[in-house]
Length: 333
Image (cartoon, rainbow, N blue to C red; front, side):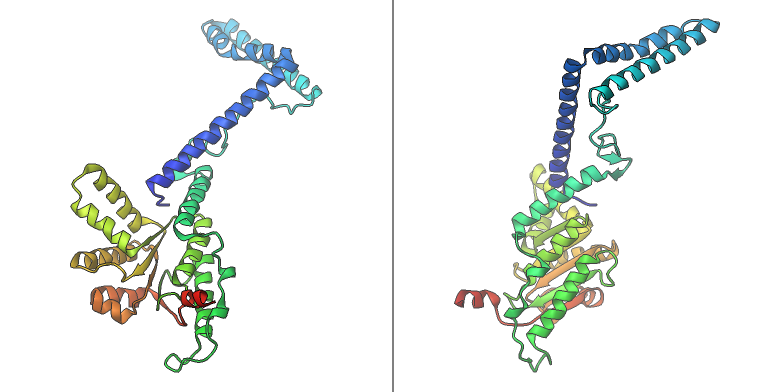
């Protein structure tokens, strides 16, 4: 999972806070039990002395050493049984005084070897969704709230279907792509059509579902993405360069990149090169990408390059958005 440094940092901070709160709860419970059952504090103090007593016993020789160790084990077992009895009689669980990690799966490390533990992964997902929400206004954007009634039922002769029929197919495809992410038969989508037809809305829906499934998702506009590549190439300040390198690496390695509004940026030879790098690298790395644009594939070929258009045509499923500008319709209403 290629989560950004900021998301990972915030998730790790939240995990540390949760661990501290877990420890505080255990400490308060321990003090409460000690006040109610003073004998349990005496027992715990005695049990904590086991290690040095074993060390002393281990320095002895012959039978005395074996006998000392056996006696210590027997004494500890008796103390533990006495403590469990006291706890049970007072209505506490037998392990009420046992210190446990916040996450027993990883022992509060956040990682199991090189694999992120679910405790940290869940927090990364939450932080990622929060970040996407701030950018995409995910409050009420879902596949279930996408309104097809805005699209005309009359057939458009040049497309041999109505906008309503076309958008039913688009909606169904985007939903399947998101809900079956990783197993859907198309890894990449190219959403294109006139402005105000729901491309960003459905991109947000895809982002939410895929992110909630535990994948790393990066959403950004084409203008912002290419600007970060430009900063990476030309930045002189060390911090600017470091951040730009982290951003561009994330664009290339995240599980799903949603590149929104391709064609709205100022196009230059550098932008053409950056777009090719994003598209080609993610295809080579077998990563999933959704691109939305007001441009058709032919217009992409003319504006950028035949190489980019060829890769989009060969590896992306095109979805045509038809209809009248919904934003204008909402203004009139």
